[in-house]
Length: 258
Ligand code: G
Ligand code: G
Ligand code: NA
Image (spheres, protein in one colour):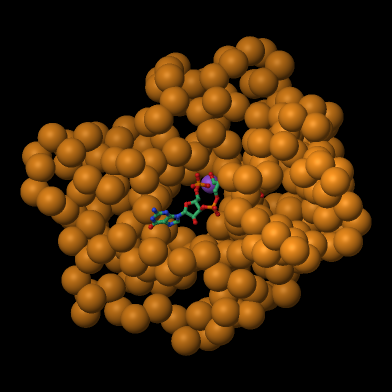
């Protein structure tokens, strides 16, 4: 069985699962939302990470039904939690360009009863890179639904800053590769992140630091007034039951940790 055939069956057999990584307010330490990350619980291969199958899903077009499933499952979970948490879902280029994503999102919101303003769609610069009228129209119809849009992995693409003006994004996610180098005292690394945070703020966007791995990074990011963080220091992506438990207990105090 090829990986593509296997993946087609995986959707039918309900072998996909979502893990949830908290997004944390860097001032209060509160969990403000989660990012849904897909995994394939394969009967013989074990837990397959997305990097091993998202590419195949994209090249076969399976990303469209897979992406729909991810959206619906993430929304079901958010509704089940019954709290005003943001739920972020990754959208790949193929998903954005194939079919009518806004229609799919509208259907999923209606099916699940998810409030539109709790859903955040994360797109990489590669999605936005083709700065065409068609892509702008797609973004505008998504925004018209009332969902939030995040620019993912910011700074790693071709960084055409023009689309910051053109596309109405709500959230800017600072790529892990920049955050990684924070807290070691290197002035240039700090300047780079500080400038990205300011850029986001000037465009009225919330800023999220990805890949926060230690307390020193939290301290620097707070000082820069970066809004939110995600990363192993705060929490790994968790299966649904563990994420539910974490919501009940809350995270240990960020101030005590730093
Ligand atoms: O969870 P992990 O760190 O292994 O994810 C690796 C990559 O896979 C990340 O870049 C993430 O954006 C991507 N990814 C995870 N879940 C999804 C998903 O549901 N859809 C798409 N398109 N990409 C995803
Ligand atoms: O590109 P995207 O932001 O969707 O990537 C999410 C991926 O990053 C997930 O696969 C997740 O497991 C991984 N990730 C989350 N937090 C950290 C972290 O603190 N360090 C590292 N190295 N990876 C992380
Ligand atoms: Na993401």
